[in-house]
Length: 95
Image (cartoon, rainbow, N blue to C red; front, top):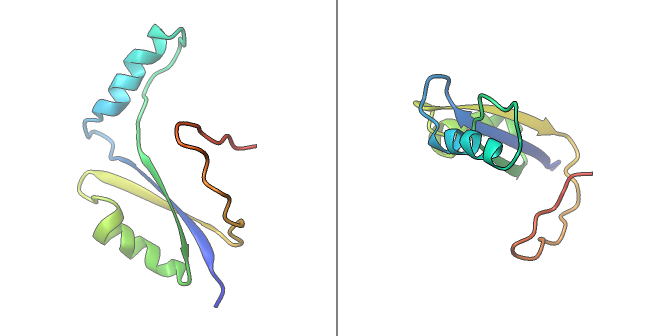
């Protein structure tokens, strides 16, 4: 069976308090980054699935809290080969 990669972007609903986003928004000017507003912090979940049509139900039942979070599902047809995890404490950058 063909496996597809689904990316789920989860973020607070409009009007819901986002203390992480507020903290980031206050911290950026202190680090010299000006002109930043409306910062929201969310999550990105990637899944390799056989049936992408089930991802919204996964979000409703487990991955997101639909009362306070919105989610967006993005399907990628050909998932890339799994890369080795980056060493602890480092981040990979997208090319």
